[in-house]
Image (cartoon, rainbow, N blue to C red; front, side):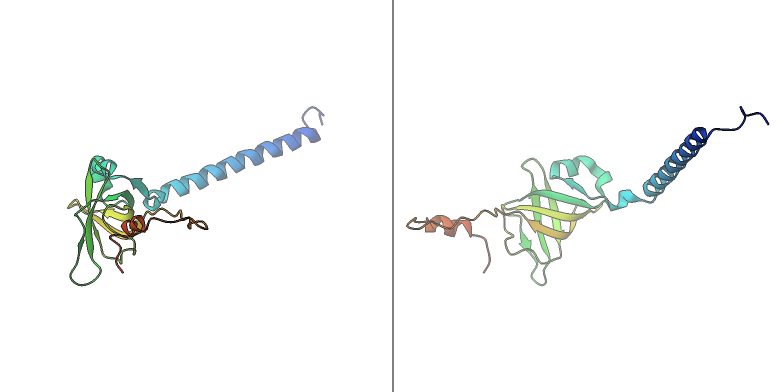
Length: 162
């Protein structure tokens, strides 16, 4: 037998390593294809403001969206019975009408920043299934001997229900 035909130990190790690398790449490519083809897009949540939502048009319908903005002054309507709530979310340029059936957070009021999660209906109403309010979480108690402005404190709580 000709010695030139037999692979050396080093060549055999290289060949096995090369085959392993090719196999690993094939497995990774197949895994990526399965993940991409399994509808991962249905699990994505988009974060938009009212202008971006309006610009998306029909593409926004049915997608899970987090809509952020301010509750427009004068737009909040509480249902006579139940927890249904309607209001407009605005970014200063555009606004979106929102219908929520959940209990709103205690701090919810006009003019406050909100993030609502839900879907856009074909009728142009945002159907909210989760309502979150934005608040300033910075609190500093008055220092010893330091006075505080009680009028400013009262003004900061206007709109909150007891």
